[in-house]
Length: 188
Figure 1 (tube, helix red, strand yellow):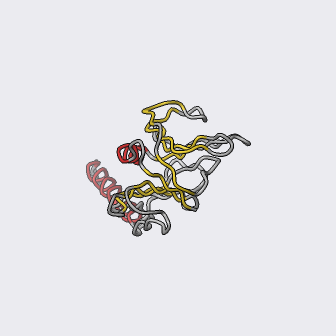
Figure 2 (cartoon, one colour; figure 1 turned 45 degrees about the horizontal axis):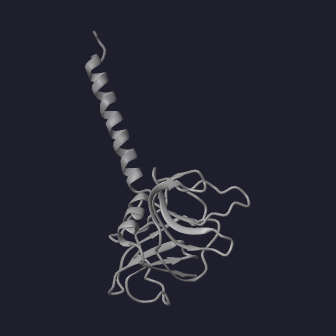
Figure 3 (cartoon, rainbow, N blue to C red; figure 1 turned 120 degrees about the vertical axis):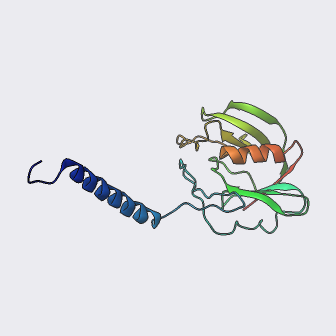
């Protein structure tokens, strides 16, 4: 290009400008909200179904007072949280769950029937199903996870469900921990 800037210089200049712009955006994104996890693999979820429970960097909540002693699964209704507690009363894992539309009564239960996989009352294919109680209305209470890891769909008005859903990794951990007869303590 006589008297002008060569095309290679234009391309080099535009490429350098694009790299600077991308780097600036990356720095901006790095200073934005970031997901955090803790060593005690847990996440928090709201009562309404959400495709992604959110994780926090804070220390995991302690096992609720009044949840008994010894090896047990503790389910806190208000917190929508489960703890797996070993024989020395140490929580080995805690995580949030998506509750059904009917809550089990506060009290002590035991894991009964275990089913590898089935279809939940909401039509979702579920795994790691561990039944631990039946409500006064005949609703079965069980821990499970959707095969695809999704949160449960919103229940139709008036539908009674007692499934307590969790993420796949948490469902696997509960399945391994909660053999038949394992204590399940439900606290407010």
